[in-house]
Image 1 (tube, rainbow, N blue to C red):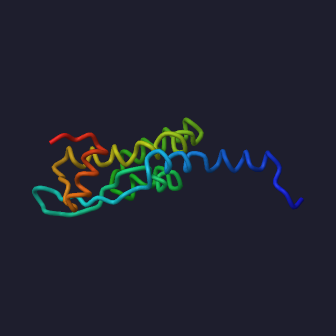
Image 2: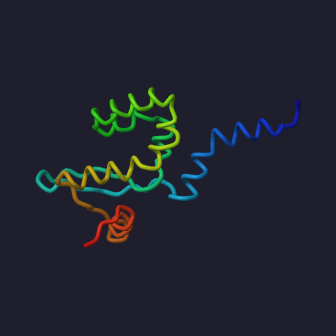
Image 3: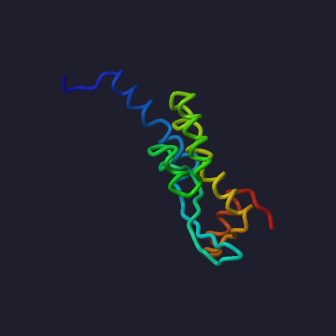
Amino acid sequence: MGSFSIWHWLVILIIFGPLIIGLAVMGPQKQILVKHQQSGLVKSGYIGYSATYLFFGWFVPIIRGEIGIGALHLIFTILTFGAFQWLVMPFLYNKQYMTRLLTNNWQLNDSEDNNKFARISLGISI
């Protein structure tokens, strides 16, 4: 009763595997400020592995104001019994979110180092 068996460790590895792999491969989520060109509104965008999406799933796009995307992610999560939320989207969501922002009249508005990091991460060439 006092020791973990191989099965306990296997369950822990399966549960935390996506988090460990995501952080090791992509690094932690990094906040990047973006500014809307017409209105001047400033908000946060994110680059890197989204542990937030891993834990909160389709609520993340809804909280960030993307109701349609959140509803679509809810459907995919239900259809895949959660695999979409655990194995796919934490790796992709932040890049997709930033791409949607930058193609809808938002521009990078952080320090030059952070902007450079975002351009490299998103594959933007100047």
